[in-house]
Length: 186
Image 1 (spheres, rainbow, N blue to C red):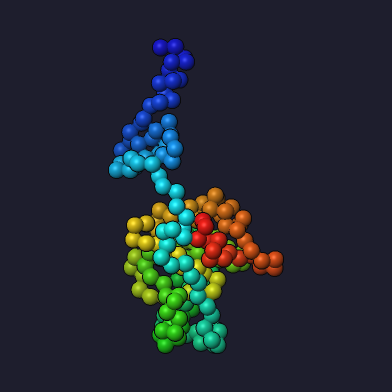
Image 2: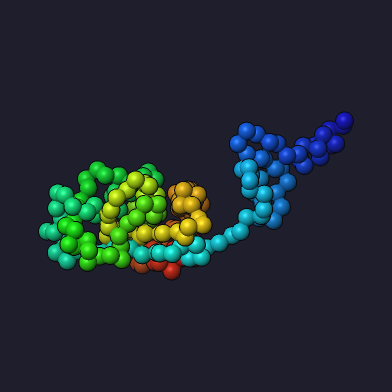
């Protein structure tokens, strides 16, 4: 086989590994890296099409004066670090205050996304064994519908492309920030 024929054969070859199928001839929305059972073209969807909730919280009336040493975990932007929910320097609010903030209650498998300040774009998936929590206004809850896995979506948020995308969506002249509408268009 001459060099040109060998090149053509390699260009159209599919390599099956133990975990995935690699195709060197992607077509349409079909990626080159395929996992067993995924044979159709990929559908491109916006977060707004697959999320059932995109919302942030608020600081409770009274601010830091209502924080307690025990109670309901109150998640702030500093708790979202390196794609994980960090419990270091945790703050808590009383259950009674949490009950008045039902729209920002955090559930397992929610994606938490920092939407303001220097940590804009940091995100994590809430662990499945998480019990209860709430977020302040600097953290957005992205809750996906049951057909979408947050552990598949969140790595895009954390990727260089995702971070660049969030940077391009910032609004405000004095302080960086993302709006819920811009997140839905992601």
